[in-house]
Each structure stands twice: as structure tokens, then as C-alpha cells.
Image 1 (cartoon, rainbow, N blue to C red):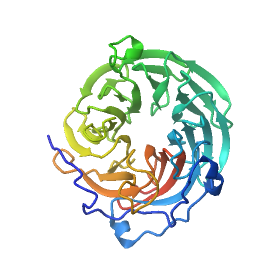
Image 2: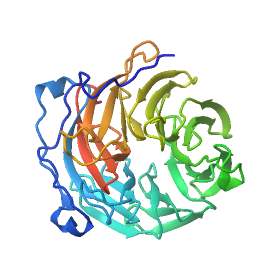
Image 3: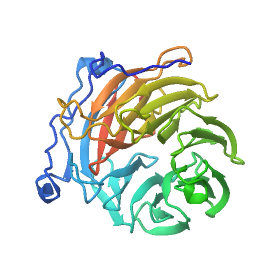
Amino acid sequence: MHTKHILSSRSALLPVMLAASLFAACTGKGDQQAVSTDSASTPATLTSAEESSPVAFENVWVKLGDSEGGIDCECGIASIESAEFSPDGKYIVSGSKKGRDVIMWETETGNRKWEKKLAEEIEAVAFSRDGRYVAIGGEDKSIHILNAGDGREVKLLKLTAPIDGMRFSNKGDLLVGGDEAGLIHVWRTSDWKETHTARQGDDEAAGGPKGKHADINSIDFTSDDQYMSTAGRNSVVKLWKVSDMSLVRTLEGHTGSVKSARISPDGKLVASASADPDTLKGDNSVRVWDFTGRQLAHFKHPKGMEAVEFSPSGKFLLAGGRQGGGYDVKATTNGFVYAYAIPANPQTEEIKLVNKLPVFRSEYLHFTQDGKRLVTSHEDGTLRLWNVKGPGVRPR
């Protein structure tokens, strides 16, 4: 087993791409009018060092998507829990925690195409593969299937527990949702019939032992839809055969809640991120496994990690989480999105940290299909659009 660690913030790192200007600080809910909720930063120019790095980021715009939040503001539980691009990259859908806002954004302009509110917190959003629908799940124990064009609800899938993780299959024929009782639900999208259920683990909410929790935080598919991963509060990642939802294997090593798990585009790697309430002694880390279950890398972080995402080229992995707050690049507690380079043969070559993007605490990361753009969502209630640059980025 190869085990690697981040040594310190003073390690030799290639520069990151920052916005041309820092964003205005918010001093509280009552002062939010002083902070633009619909402003775009001026894109900066890449330096020669950044052009030679595996990946760099250029900020395009910052938008407030949680109506109870504020840009770079500690505004209670305001947060964008999930944000994803449409398959053609022309739109972004986001779902918020405190404001309960669902917003459809135009990617190029950052303008709102439509918006609506739900009755309770939103935890997960997903675009159907044909771009016609968005699925919205959260604390109201339902998945709302909305028309992507106008936000009109076309189907309501009722459940017995809140939804945390959700994903359409790559072929678009399945929607999978994971709930807070540890159950995995599989629906056929042609008629929205539930075809399979499976269990992440024992969960108190589903009659399991007291104190046991298996909430499903994240779902992903291999590119051919033959296999699926689920990540849960019970500290494990499970790999399933999609056709019959039989368990293939369990990836063990985390001791905190596994907040996110993603399968690499070639199906050979699984990355996971965990967060532990005990920030000093607990498991706040990113791990990378091969599909056989062998751990290839373990990166420790000072606070909980919430999201991982492979680039469409498979050449790098991004990870973000709860570290720090605010957009002060001089602050030692500032949060980051970390970029790790994936070598040609990760079985024998080291997976290395190659870049860090200073940004407010992150919740979710998603690329366009060509890998040229990234949307990040944050615990101040913002989502942020980035151009992705570098030789490790697959060209259009």
C-alpha cells in the first residue's frame, strides 16, 4: 500500500490562478446589500508558470445562490449543497440549504433563467443526460423532477427519508437516489418505476442499532454504467453491479463520514473524501483506490473534506472542503480546492498535489464534459464559475 501525505502549506506548489480582484467582505446579514449578488470578477491573465502547470483556474463569475447567504460571509447554515452543468454546458442548476432555492443559471452570463423555492433544505441536484429535466432532492423526503426549460414540476417521487446523494446514469435510463436511512433507490426514467433497492449499511433511521448511521452522501457511475459507487456516513464506499445491484466490494479505511466518491473516467480509480466531527484526531482526508480495492493514496487535511471530482481527461483530481473561510489569500485558515495530478500509471507512480485554489469552504465540484470549465459551490451560499487551463486539460 502506498500512503502519501500533504506535508505542509509551504510545500513546493505551482501557482494557482486567482481572480483579478478580491471579493468584498460581508459583515452580516443586515449588510448584504453592500455586496453584489450578481457580479462577475474580471478574468486574470495566466502567467507562464501557470501555463506550464497541469491545471490552473481563472475565475469568470461569482453568484449568490442561497438567498440567505452572502459572498464570503459567515451566514449561518447558508450553503449551495450541489450545483451541476447541463450536458451541453450551457446551463447550471443549483440547490441551496438555508434559502431552499433552486436556480437555473445561464453559464456564459451568470443570469438566472428561472428560480423557485422548495419547502425544505435542498441537498442534491442532477441534470438528466438529455438535458430535458433536473432532479431535486432534499429534506422533504421527495425527489422533484422538473422541466429544465421552465422549472415546472413533471413528476414527484415520494420517499420515507430525506435524500442526500443523487445521480442519473450516463445512458440516462436510470436515476439513483440515496437517502438518510441508508437505502439506495433505483428508478427507471422511462416510467419512473422503482426497480431496485439496496442498503449502504445499518442505520438507526431504518431500524438498525442505536447510534449507527449509513446516510448515503454520494453516488457515481462508471462511464459504461456497469458499476456504481455509493458513499456513506458509515465510513465506507461500496461498489455495486448496476444490473442487479449486487455488491461487488467495500472500500474501507475512512473513519469519518464519506461525503463524496467519484469513479475515474477510465473506471480504474475511485476517489473519496471524508469529514469527521473530531477535526484534530478524526479522519478528514482524501483517498484514492484502484477498482480492486487497493488504496493508492491518502491525503490528510486539517478539516472535513466534502467533495472530490475527476477531470474528464482523467489527468487530475480536485478536492474541496471545510477548511477556513473567506477570500483572504494571506490567511493561514483560508480554504482551498486542491488539485492532484494523476500519473499514467498510478499503481506505481505517485499521485501528487500540484496546485491549490484559495476559495471559501467548498461543498460541490463539477466539470463541463469537455473539462474546460468548473463550477464550485460554497458554504457562504455562492457558486463560482472557473475557466480551467493547462496542458493537463483535454482540448475542445
